[in-house]
Length: 85
Image (cartoon, rainbow, N blue to C red):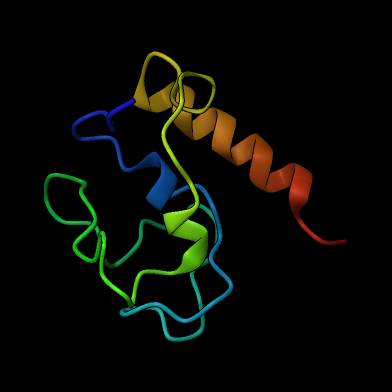
């Protein structure tokens, strides 16, 4: 499955605990990544500085749903379900 144009949900909803360019201490959930461009595409896609957690997250019908709103909801629920206590 290809990424939906102008979505960026997977670069917004999840937290990132490792350093990433623009977020040296990681990125909190719900904050758009500093690496998203104007078209909501990753500027560091395929580059070594892209965090492993990002590279491992692949688009799927279950995760992406039918809209950006569906993807944000699914990913936010996943973030909530996996947040350490």
